[in-house]
Amino acid sequence: MSNEEKVPVPEQEQQQKAPAPRGRAFDLDIDVATGAERRKIIIGLTWPAFAENVLASLVNMVDTIMVSSLGTAAISGINLAVQPRFIMLSVFMAMNVGCTALAARFKGAGDRQGANNVLRQSLMLSAFLCVIIVGIMLVANQPLIRYIAGPQIAENTIQNGIDYFFIQMVGFPMTALTFAINAVLRGVGNTRAAFYNNSVANLVNVVLNYLLIYKSRTISIFGAAIPMWGAGLGVVGASLATVIGQGVALIMGLSVVLSGTQYVQLSFRAKWRPDFSLIGRIMRIGLPAMVEQLFMRVGMMMYTTTVTRLGDDSFAAHVIANNIQQLSFTTGMAFGTAATTLTGQSLGKKKPELARLYNRDICMMAMAVSVLIGVGLLTLGHQLAHLYTKEQTVINLAYQALTIVAFAQPFQSARFVFTSALRGAGDSRFTAVITLIGILIVRPLVSKLTVDVLSLGLIGAWIALISDQMTCFILAIIRYARGKWAELKI
Image (cartoon, rainbow, N blue to C red; front, top):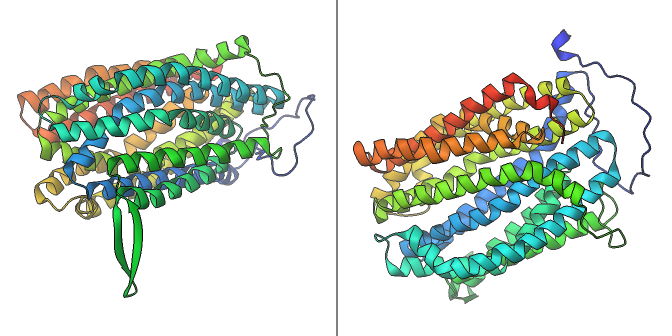
């Protein structure tokens, strides 16, 4: 066994620990000496997140395919609402970066009470922010959707986006609270709970899509005519199905932390008052991440306006390619979850070298899987695009975009891993900076060149997107290699 594969494990310091909860606590022993054991732990953390992301992406694809049967105006209308919704999500995703990092640190240090307090503070903070942000977005709904659409998009497409977004806003608090619960659970190593919760919610979403989008009709099963009830609500039905699924996820998430079987537990008898010291620690990590997410979403919204100028066919192809691309994100996001958790817990144990070994293994595993995904996109891209539309022009444009995505897969996954590791260490300020550089400088400049100067159309827009991702990948690698993240105090 090589020296690189061995990690010295000193005797554990005596700590005052609360009694272990009943049942399985997902208390991973990350102090291991061999690469095989490290990889086993990585897989244990990654597969639920990977399965969750794949299922969510597949459901999103099914969602889009089901809506696409209503016509181009429906699928494009929903996509107009995607970016403003992600702007809202960015606030909570960013705050949850701080919650995950702190929960991981507390878990590494054996402080269960601290991890429980992180859960309570994150729920209270999420509820408070929801009141403000949802209120603003409900007022801004129509002007925002019309701005994103621009003058080239038809009125019925715009109205579909407005209707879809309004319902999403009404149900948004359930999403925000579910995010908070899952973030803390991931921080202490329980990636399975989010997988189970979101899996059931996504299946509910698909079933309700079928019942709410289409009108009542007769379907054939094994030759028998079966009458099927349907509300015929179209885009509104799709949005309602999503919101109800989110409600199911919240109920399941609460049942997990109220069960008393987890490392983190929610108790209504605990002190439910703001802990401004802990909130400050969460926001020191979360605020830079929030800025990062806001920059990214604002940049994406600006980028979408660039694509809409190319016309309905290009925009429809962009929506399809982007929808399929989400599936390709699953590898990087899942391994990134493991990187955040294991970096935070290793630093909580004051063992940065252990974090480095884990992150090296995570990156190699992520890139290997991403190569397979890239091959899949190259060989099956036409067939995947054909699921959404029968228009050959749109299919060809979507496949061209997917070809670019396929070759970028390994770098895309590595970027997710190293930025997630930096966030797990608390270095979210730097990840915000590189996101700003990529999406507000690199992407607009490259798209100006490729779309407006070289007239490459949709291909030019996707070259700009990948240029942004490659820039962030290079900068993240450089930052990680310098090692300052290992010395951060949060």
